[in-house]
Amino acid sequence: MCLAIPAKIISIDDNIAEVEIAGVTRKVSLDLAPEAKLDDYVLVHAGFAIQVIDEEEALKTLELFKEILEHEVS
Amino acid sequence: MKFLKEYRDSKLAGEILEKIKKVSKKPAKLMEVCGTHTVSIFRHGIRDILPHNITLISGPGCPVCVTPNKHIDEAIELCRRPGVILTTFGDMMKVPGSESSLSAEKALGADIRIVYSTLDAVDIAVNNPEKEVVFFGIGFETTSPTIAAAVLRAEREGLTNFSVLGAQKLIPQAIRALLDNNETGINGFILPGHVSALIGIKPYEFIAREFSIPAVIIGFEPVDILQGILMLVKQIEEGTARVEIQYSRGVPQEGNPHAMKVLFKVFEPSDAVWRGIGTIPGTGLKLRKRYRKYDAVKKFGIEIRESREHPGCRCGEVLRGVITPLECGLYGKACLPEHPIGPCMVSVEGTCAAYYKYGKRS
Ligand code: SF4
Image (cartoon, rainbow over all chains, first blue to last red; front, side, top):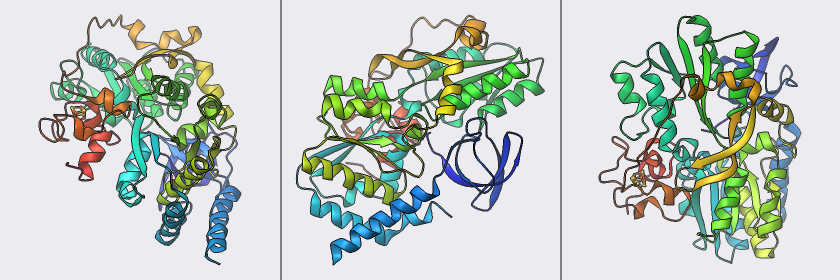
């Protein structure tokens, strides 16, 4: 039940954002994440954006692991 | 799709698994608190590929499963009242209460509508001014702010025909209750990613500080889960206990303070009864005085004297991680996804349903 999926904000009208999830657009409320901006990725849960995805952190997680693994191999 | 594909990379997953195998020597019993993790772990076959010294056990993190029958009986009582439209998330429909379920009531003619969002329930109230619209709300910190936002919208719009039957719960102190009971010998916690996206890391710090058990907030894709397990086994091998965040792209240290403010503007903590665990102080939510007019139980004077559970169902022990579904005598026999006896078989995120769907039969 605590499923939330990443979606990209493609337009914002007041506190409602239009987001794209796997090619499908739907409207979500920004009542819980008013700081979300156009082109941000947000986590969508039950019709609400509940968090803005931190792109830098996302990249860091992947890079960090690739690095550790490469280091291991060598 | 961005932010999903990379975390499903099977090569990367395979390499992390190798690393886990290399690092992990000690027995490690890890509990995934969240039902969404349970499903993801089964879907990706993670239990089967881990080395034998690592055991994953499922915990109390399926909101449908931990909702005691009393609340289901209240919802049933409400949907039988004339002029009431009961709205809820789809997961609750088939859960058996003491004598009936919402799907059975719907078949008998009750006006029950499944909504995707709490705001859909508010829309139904706006569009049906002559009816009373009740939202039956369950969920953890991920969902509860959306229920609070719906109440605030109802207030903004001056609606008098909208109310909430609330059965929401708060996660961190439920973990404390499990640890206080000390029934399972857990060595590490896989903490829920999306509850944490709201509450952040702080509320879990007692797990490491007071119980010396490592805990990691983990995402839901296979690479996330394996990476998080690696972080846990590293701590276990080192003999350290910290709370860490693997799912940093979705979980800032502080969570989502704005959403938590919305939540606690409308609700305040209260005691809550968890199926199979009992009353845990401070893990429920009740409407604050100012918003009490949206309390459906008060509004309609609902009083459930006695709720009954199926005597053979061992959901309680399953939810505490004390037994696996295989140890329940009804599992796969009298209790099947087509005719579930307990909520752990009804909910897609229930441990019994996950075991059954992914073929664990003995
Ligand atoms: S198998 Fe069915 S009866 Fe047994 S614990 Fe699970 S839900 Fe309850």
